[in-house]
Image 1 (cartoon, rainbow, N blue to C red):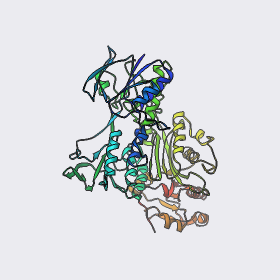
Image 2: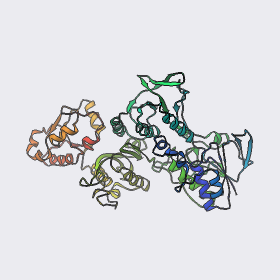
Image 3: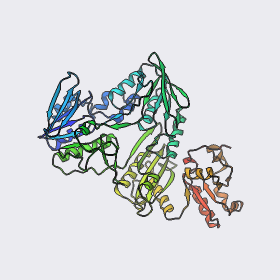
Image 4: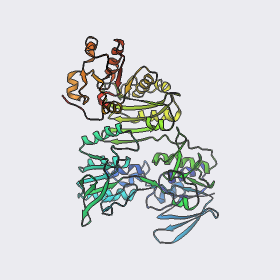
Length: 562
């Protein structure tokens, strides 16, 4: 059986490697238009930042063997042709015509089964000045090598990143850690706009600003300025930002021209349509990785999720099915994560707004909790926003942010979304506990229990954005701050003149100072004391009481310091 794979990075490389384990008699050939094979594309920002010292480490096995054409031939028994660009698929003859980019020769390759792992390409809009030498994208190994060389020259002191998505945000730290002054420009108001709710984007923005990074949201880049092939600034519709280097991280789009010209079905997201076995509309052609659309595990709708982890999982499914094994790719939950200095930010599933748009009766709550008990050295906070359907009580999504170990919590939440767990099941999940690893009630447990309280009408609460919206509309609830005066001095408080400070320990005696004819919103540092204050007021006959979710630590907006 002749298996021809177009693309030799993530999905293509994985398909080939898996095939030789489950179908060792197959004759496998890879056509790769680039020079580099099977490299960790998601590791490119860490090579640019110097965390990964040698670029070859991104394309090596754990023992340091480079996965090049020789490796694939000797170890995997796979033939690889680098610098060969596939130009045309003849589905009737089962042939692919490819151009040898080194010699200019056209070659024809036969196949019994064809795999399209053509990936995606960065979007590079025709902004005037975008052809300057130090205007980069960061999507493949040559991009990373060029950026690394520019930084190593010592001539880059200021950099502007156009685009506040995952790639742009990951490169921020890489540049700042090398002493480069970084500014980020995005058309939308907050970082990671396609991934996170604005509240969480603002939390990330604050973390970036702590490191001196300037974020210009809601601005459009109109020109890259310079002279004599040297960049001097990036011009937006509001300002000029000095720059020696520019990274265009606006987004990517799937490479589907080859599939389109071959008459394969293309979806609304511009990706190749495949079934659960990763077959295209031609049963002898499979596709996977950044060039395909797949099902979302919650909605069943086709989505496009370009991610190295997804591509590798799909490569395994493709190989299994070519070999006659009945493997299924069950879909994606939209899980993504990134590190920004000491912070982790991530998402899985749907936001409440997205869930409502999809027809769910969704409710959500934001909590703040420490990753380990307060008595353990290094304990750090995590902000978690969890979403569930009020009717089925199934977990629909979550967002995380913080200096604490948010990654393992996100993985638990991704499993809950994919596995159809209810908030009741999640709240009782037997997660591992020991003080070095978790609090007795894990932050995920705390989040699930809090959302149960909200859905069961045991608690009325507002997210930070919901409370801000009330004041923006002219409503003026009383804001009961249950912290000590010293905490308020150190941490700040909400920027409204209706704040009343009554420490929790004094609330029973001083509750009479509060009006019963107005709504009272309680809060503290993380709103645990706020919750106690809420229940005290309820017991004392206050009817209009609510809680600020996450307290002052989850508040991403301006604060007032006394």
